[in-house]
Length: 229
Image 1: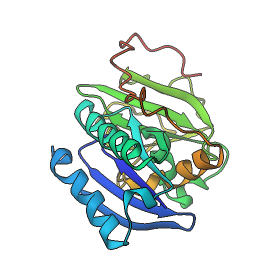
Image 2 (image 1 turned 180 degrees about the vertical axis):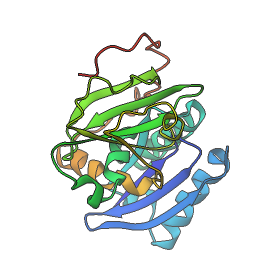
Image 3 (image 1 turned 180 degrees about the horizontal axis):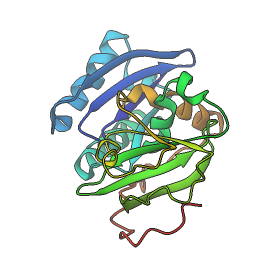
């Protein structure tokens, strides 16, 4: 059993998973609710499934990028439970779990399609990365300002599907004909299921003493955008 925490955006989401899939899910999209609801959701899910934290195989948390406050709360709670219950801690990049949350129908559109999860980074800036349809990273996570040439280095023969809370503000600016926007996407702790299982398989765990959220903008200032590839 693994419990997954997603607090990188306004959504506070907790999912309990096993090798078969997601067993329980609690979510609240109310802004600034993470501090008051995250531990309540965790307690509810554990009680519902007759579990203690020490019964878990691991705890996973969306490590960023995203909301500074949301990430701090999620990572702090995950580290506390990991340490107290002596269970492994897994950190998952937010954009990677977003990719796995896109429907199989969308990801099955062909090898000529790229996928761009986007998180709102305030003003006209987004956190984003680019994946192929197998989840292989094509462009590492970056924080950049949106303009009309944002995807100009991607050939028109390749489709790009943008999704996430950062993509909405791009629709009126990015007019390239091969760029599409998925309006119905919703981030969730349930999306962490696939990358978490892969992390367990590979024994990819975080050091509880030193693990910190991946804020990105704390360390990388926005520069003029260069070639995507």
